[in-house]
Image (cartoon, helix red, strand yellow):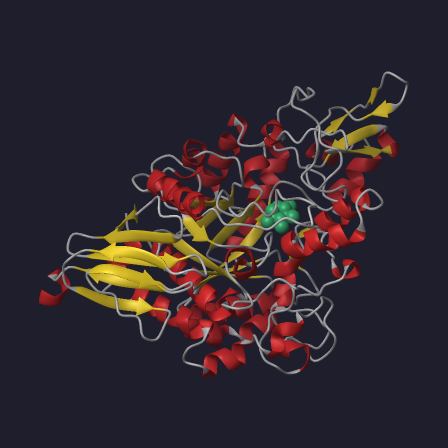
Length: 571
Ligand code: NOJ
């Protein structure tokens, strides 16, 4: 089935680091309005805004304290309405981040819940009594770890209970088995859809249901003694009932797009339970299997670690998902979001081959099957901040990890690890120009600006026909060209030379045509044999690429899109 959201190109914006219109060092909704023309010129048309509801910002807005108001740091309801109007006036669409799994501990529901066991809101959250250990020490109800270090439980003195919090102490999990809570959340979803937005990205969608027998996990513990067993609160059967209810009573009432975050560990089969076109409650899910294919995250704290991309594993991961979804569902494809380091630092070479590797990565992504999502700054090849110091890291995940490791691991190793892996890398202010503060703000921003903005910025790249920004623009123009759109959106996808250790190559095919996208993921030349037939180069990230039948040698990070065969020529 053809739909607008399959044909769209997504672009994720983190409002607080995108553009500061009122000179307070924090990006805001009016700032986004100011940049819509540039985004339109680039060719993206489905904006996903990171969380904009009122929040104490313990986790960059994923800790919501009021679901019905705009965070005053970012603007007002009128600003949002203006943004929606301006987006729609340009033929673009906009979706908001909806956090259903947890609230902030500052939310009035939790404030009441934590004081009074008889308050109705107490049962909006998940409480259990603690246990006593072998030596009389107090223990949480289970041995589960949380995603952000430490136990998944936090003690609440007023009621002498623990509440579940699978992310941070400041983000208590909601009890979706309570019908009154579900009513509240459905009303909140409707409230925002009534403002005229085009859908939601649903945060942590996989975790709404928990195993409610509250048993210890038998899996081995981590260094702190907690067990990172996500199966206790991921993809559980009750969750699909909750999502179906949302679909029946809310999502089915309009032509919106609903995209769930379904994280690592979910199989294709599990993902289909969310997005099967016949039976799923959602339209797409973000999966993460491809995100750490250079092993950099697992490398943990080894200073000597040299990350190496396993190109074969990376492309097979994409293929596994794209092929697994192709008959019955649809996939968003992306390199990174606000939870990952910058992609050019991760899979490219930000120094010697910055332009080549960034354009190669974008060409590879943007011609794949699925709805591509760019992350703000990716279009200019923004990089990790290689000069950040320990005190520059703000992210709650980093801070928790730092607290648990400091003293046991030396600071140099910690710093090296966070510079390569931390979420702060993707959360530095957007680099608009070489003006002070990268043109993001007129005052010192709350988040550190990556000093390479002098070299890497939107203004310079828009003026340079060979820049990354221009190449992204060209690639999107090709994807959206009416002559090619059906092939690049709906055409089939198959790897070419799947075992080639350097090349990520795939074939897009419709009834009439076949295009090969061939990318060299390395700084060494890579060879490929092209078919003995007429070829036409549709796009390349080197100015003088000339693919020909027979053996071809791709230069460092070179990427080609080649029409194979003469058929198209006869059109
Ligand atoms: C997933 C979001 O992408 C991440 O940034 C956040 O910290 C967690 N969910 C908790 O909301």
